[in-house]
Length: 261
Image (cartoon, rainbow, N blue to C red; front, side, top):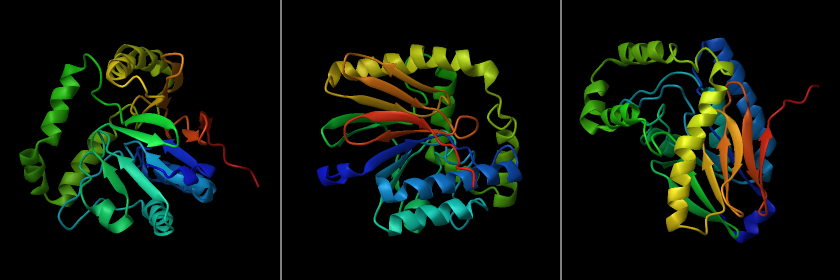
């Protein structure tokens, strides 16, 4: 929990960067933009929450991780070295993050949804994949990917081959092709039919929650669930470049726009 004295600073939330797609040059362009955002907020940040899918593919072999992302990893290490906590809620694309990021970058990893208090406000935080009713096919696949035996078997594939295979499948996804317009209504429908149902179920047991924060669905949306409770879908850093900022009193959904010099 952020100390009440830290509420003179902000808590920041962002999600779904999918670095690595659709190709090296465009991924690097977004990575540099992300680093600029981190530079802009770092002095004002009590904590930073990256709510999943930081990379489009990430797998930690015993002695090897995917190449690249040195600007981002260096900036995150610089921020944590300065004393600001950075958290990563593992998403469906970076669920194979284990001990490399905590040991080398000092990022705090979170696997499951959590309820956290910042100041006098209560937050429910989750990446958002597999929550709510339906989507049984994905929920089954997620269990397959989370199975330690399957992770152990994949680790025995040589990294050059394993990472090439994973990156090939990543580049077939709609995220890799930066397609958004045809999916906006579908994403809205999923947020309503799945995430909102899940949020209301959690609210029944925890009516004191003020904010639900989700990634995964890529569409930035702010929904009033009850008179006091809001649900925030953070959007993405493929086409929207959106994030949420909590100043100790209220939560704002914003878009990062690089200042022109």
